Length: 70
Image (cartoon, rainbow, N blue to C red; front, side, top):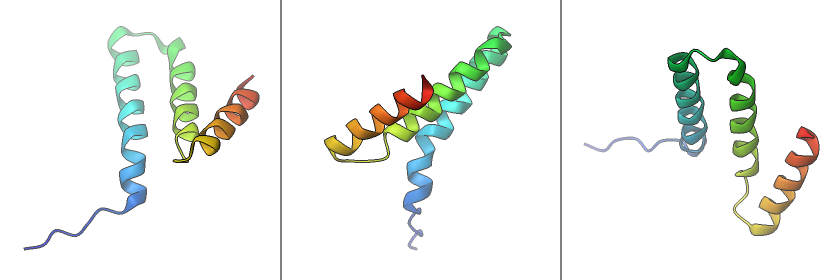
């Protein structure tokens, strides 16, 4: 029996989903709702920076992300 391969989009979104789940669990466990916004925004920024495999593409994404979040 062959299992169907997972779509690349699903595989690429798994680390971001796991990170948001862990951040939400930590915020819920320690009862600190003020940390939700920085955690989620940081996770989204990290996910956006990791879109490209080339060094120049990653550096461009980092510069754009830092500029937009400041």
